[in-house]
Image (tube, rainbow, N blue to C red):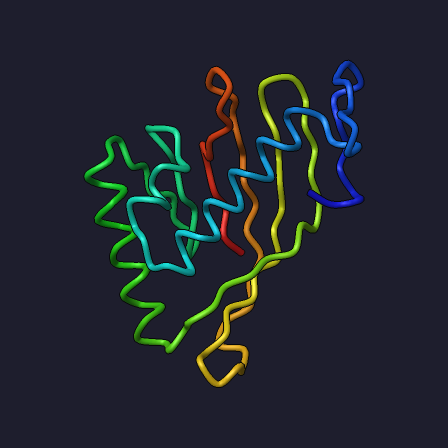
Length: 142
């Protein structure tokens, strides 16, 4: 994920230097990013544990089922489309993995088709491990 990862001291790194958890979390965020870049609400929703909480504009919103979350994600994608966002990318600002939970902070940049920055923001993610999968349990948007 980044050189700032703080791994669980009991996790063993693979040949590429990443633990299984780091690899799975990296894949989770790559899937999440692909969902945004493809404007694929279902792919984005697949990255979440339910219920999930999203804090934005100083309010917490709890999404209890996939239908509620999908409605919210579709509204978000519509708003990004209206802003002219065509490409999203992120940088891992910090990450900490401990057991079956992780905290990850991403700095996001979203660009228009002309390559101009349309939006920049930071999100903090609380992740949980569900079997072999890592999922987003909560987001706090700055």
